[in-house]
Length: 234
Image 1: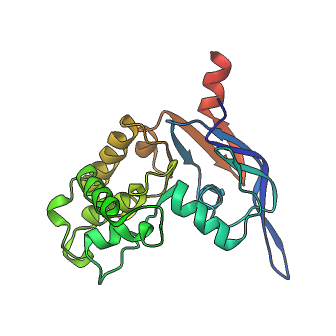
Image 2 (image 1 turned 90 degrees about the vertical axis):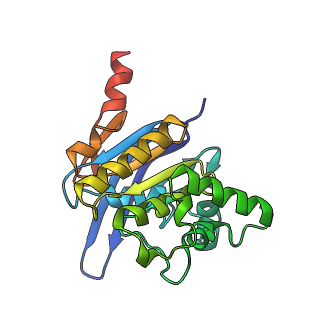
């Protein structure tokens, strides 16, 4: 079985007139369907840049990126947006909800331009996503009426409403207190048990305990990968 995500010798260089910054250097990484992977490491190590590349928010500078059966290296902006909309769900540290849209309307945003999903099915998907994150009772509220933890739940619902191949999360508990952070992590645990493939960036050691596999980064490189170690042991 082919991995869901496969990076081969993948690098990212940010260039200015004065200096080239090698944010990612020769990354080799595979993630299988159903895995729960945490990418961790010190600030500035490249973990958020890596997640950005996985989410097709930008292209790499060299190497290969396959998402499922698709080679997605070098896609233009509109092509990347199309793949993101169908195959990738992303949750950010800041909730990125639109304040003048209701919870249900925010969750439905990824399907706005999906002609392949009928209006009736869109409504059903929104209702299902609300149930998944235990926010059905808040469907007609606005983000400003919600706590931080509730807003992040809505952001998770928006990320999963299109049934993506993978759910990416960049420090999803970074703006939450301990109680709300634990509630959001419990939600990720629940989604994983239901079969969702998750790749999360976090610097928090407690967060890393929720994952099956921990990838540690340092200076733009993968320093260690517990998945590779497990494979060697096996």
